Image 1 (cartoon, one colour):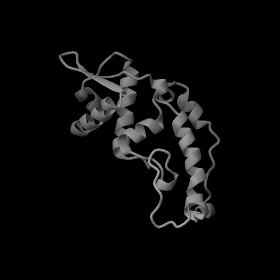
Image 2 (cartoon, helix red, strand yellow):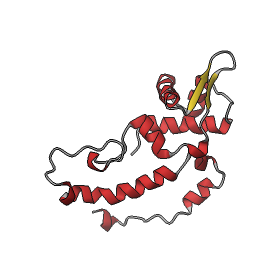
Image 3 (cartoon, helix red, strand yellow):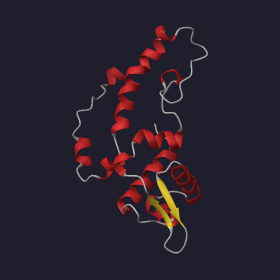
Image 4 (tube, one colour):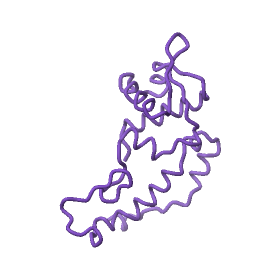
Length: 157
């Protein structure tokens, strides 16, 4: 699950992207439109600014604007900015690898094998899914038409 902070970051980025590059929105406008607590939003916007995704302007027509290309902003990039490493285990992380202290042999670790393939597939998808995809009118339709596997109750037990 993504954190509430990450969800808010995506909501703010979508609003800014819909506004267009070079067009700003004030923090209060973003907070109201995306239903994000203002103080929390300010922290998120500062993180996004520090990582070169948004810029702020002062003054009457000031606010935040998207400066990165929505087609270049990936889901994995935003998650790492907001939440940090996204791997379920440190021993399979691509950006924050560290050996598990309680594991004597990574190559034969059943827990690592259990998560490695699923994580790799999920990460590959997150690294190729961009903010632009969320903005595309047919993006929702194509996402809904994906043949995703469904779990039967017996499979989940």
